[in-house]
Length: 447
Image (cartoon, rainbow, N blue to C red; front, side, top):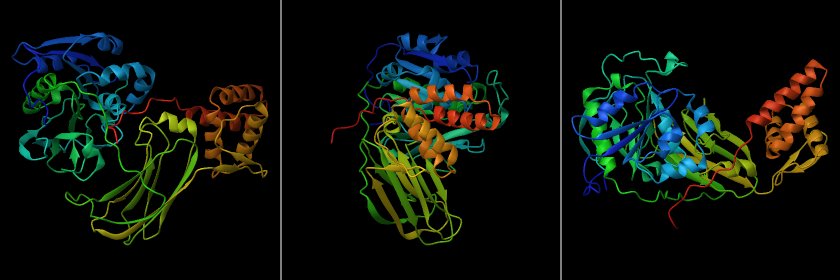
């Protein structure tokens, strides 16, 4: 069912609550005027994220912008309790910060977005079935005003617009529905929704919005106010089996045939994942691996000619618990202009991975390091290793979380040799950056 395509559940004008993220355009009052229109809608402006969560409203609007550093705010401010509140409310997320919050609920509006220059401005409105019902037209004015984005404004991203890669044949198309698609790149949707949650990828100042787009945003917000609140249960993808998978890939930008193939893995304990991809053609084939973009390690291999692509990735328990999707993706994508036949992907999963250190010691990877002797041996091994082993050793040390970082901090402080100090400091930063906080898994539809 399309957004708001049912009898209103509320009587009287809707109520909106707006909070502007720190690096978003400073135009909350202008946005309030857009939502209010000529009607009697009531709009509340919140000074802080917490105050926004504490308000009562029909629709909660998170006004984000285009600043790519929004992840800093998200990591510092958004708790599991806050996400539980957002999950149970009608939320209109705008820009990167809006995408980060809704993406943390499992909607593909942060990890699966691409960013376009301002020339991609004309969009087509879609019904829930994906049938065009009319052109909204230009979303931005011909001249985009240079409105500062706060004290950390950087001009290189201010004209970018975000859109979800949402071909009809993708798994993501089962998770969200497009509200708009680009006319010039119809596989991408700059506005999507699922039930009571909607996201708009236009993070520009309201002053840059076209009159037609502003009216469309007001209409979407009004429809969202009438959307019944439902449990956010995500669909389950089919899990891939180890072995060799053979498939065809359509040319890039194909609307009706898949130009990429996704394979999903799940793990409860440490595993080592290996994948190798081969296929015909001279280039354009890309192999991805990751957590769906939830801030965790990933790999990307691009083929320059006809060679095979391969990666190897170690997944440790803390990384697994920090991935709310509890799924890992391998996908092969054809960015070439010609279709590829008989592409082959071989997946191997080692359920009992070990790490062989330079001195010959073999370390099992299904449990964290617990004592300083082990820490010392791993630190020495890191310093003696080349770049091929260092990521795995740093990841293993990160499993010890506070134990490892406290130990390394003490080592760094006691080193007199400047070269050794720098080497240990590099390891300390590497371990600190790999620490992952556990996150609750996304609720999914029953099997």
